[in-house]
Image (cartoon, rainbow, N blue to C red):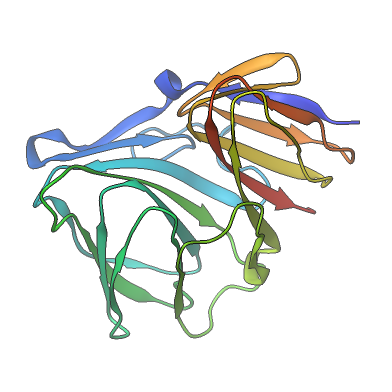
Length: 221
């Protein structure tokens, strides 16, 4: 039977970024100077960051290694460039994955004229190292699973109309992030930016209080 082991409210996230440079970050897990030994990971997930970039703002080239990085754009358009030669623009509805392998460098910017908001999730690979990899799935359909086999994890995108219901997957670890709207899970209401970390084997039902969009990670370990 599932039980919600932790509900993290949007307002409880650790603040970060450089607001004076147009970068505002909100971290769900221990990150940078906000060290919490009891909040280092959940299943394969190491980070779930909400990033807000003003027009013209962005993260200059920086390195990553031994991490699967999955990005979901909420609004605006993200420009991505990396040291393996990829340059893409990621839009709402697209799933971007950067497998950093033994090491890769990338740039993330808002080259548009409107604010950019995206959610970026870092997952630990089962086997660190290897060659970097990259892909973008354009306009992923509702309920279409996106597999990240290197981390043993599956991402489900759920878009619900008000009053709609969905079952969470049955897995030992399930992470639910509310992108927009509000839902009721296990008797608890979650709003945009809130998240629930759930354990067990039988998926509880989620009810949309309003039109809602969810990112749901299914992890067997």
